[in-house]
Length: 310
Length: 274
Image 1 (cartoon, rainbow over the protein chains, first blue to last red):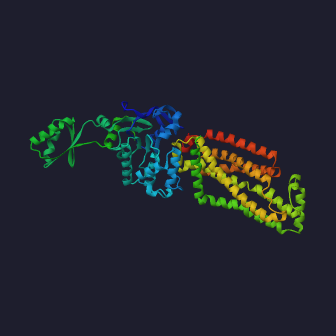
Image 2: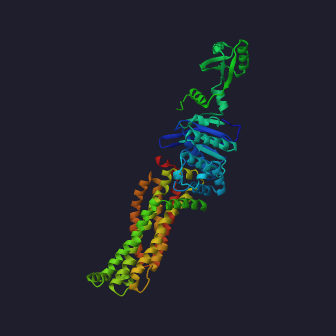
């Protein structure tokens, strides 16, 4: 948890059921102000319900929720005025043009039309605003949804699977737009089941499954906790000379995958290890500390957690 | 209540409606049928039977009508009186079907449609209150029906005045009873049916179910409206005012209750599963 930072969103032991289905159970997490929090988990983990509880669109059965210091059950309208959302399948009035849809949203949020136009330009959908939304591609709809979500300049943005159904190029563009928004100091909560989507964006990761937040923290903290041993990639003119690596001081394990991936007991061992190899006549062509991917982190977290999120 | 929200919701719905030709063309055909084509044919048929045995039959029917109706009937000949009665008391009340049907068709889809399209998700996360949404939807459903009534009524007035007016010494329609009916009694009747239909629309799982259920509601309301229409047209006095006033009261009470019952979860489509 990020208790040192001010929280934009706080969930304390929150539960929500639909009949016999427990969508969220005893959920605890905090989203720090101005940070990107990624709710990561498989489908059915409770991410969408969490988003809906945040705005007060759903009311929790139990627990405390605080958003911008307000309670959704009591101050729902105020929270909803200050939050923007991109739902998993952005829907619009298809018979209306993009511009008419944005005008509608602007009136609902009390924004002026200039803000809507500025947002449309930022998300590069301004050229299609006079077309009926029924003729939009999935990518265009997502851009329009992003435009609609920011036209009232919200303090918090809730993005629920914003790249669902998009081709890789459009997905990358959307993620770049999210990075841009994060750079502008917005508090962002991104729900996704795609590991690569959270990569490089997340300031904090909340791993969810079965309605619980299993683990949370910054990627660095989680890497330190779950992938403590650093991995370094080695290559040499004569790869056979690297066969001695497993026997050297500070090397925990070695794997061969084209080059050599050596897991060290401590990152500080690396300079001595390089010096030893050079002294022994190994002509190194590549030494590269490997930053663990989110995927590796995710599976490491899964392995350490007694409840399998998948 | 934020009236900008209400206007935005009603405006978006009306704009969508007027852009959907598939939706309003059948309704336009129905309105033309009731307000123009059927009256045109019936009045033309009545006019064809002058100086025949039919005239005697009509004369006898007019004589047997309630005193209030036969006394109110204008015209020097039995057929002129029959045409007047047909135009004012018989055909026109049938036109009540049109606004109620049109508004019911729009209203039944109003809330469940948001859920089916997925646009309810945006509204659920927006600062719109459920009361504002309800009133917006009520207005958006009421306007098409009432607009059809006003336009259709104008067309109807033109038809009957042109066809029957020469026999009655000039334009005679609308009568006072009809003005009272159109301006004071029919609007709350449409509103009452819509309060029930919107409630159905918020509860059912699909637009098809909403339409089925609302047609069950619409039928008795149409029958009641017909009876009330005849009564108001025949006797447009204090009782007509009271009927209108009590209808408005019922419409307002049902609206307040309906707005309170509408829950944000319904827009997401999860409440019905709980």
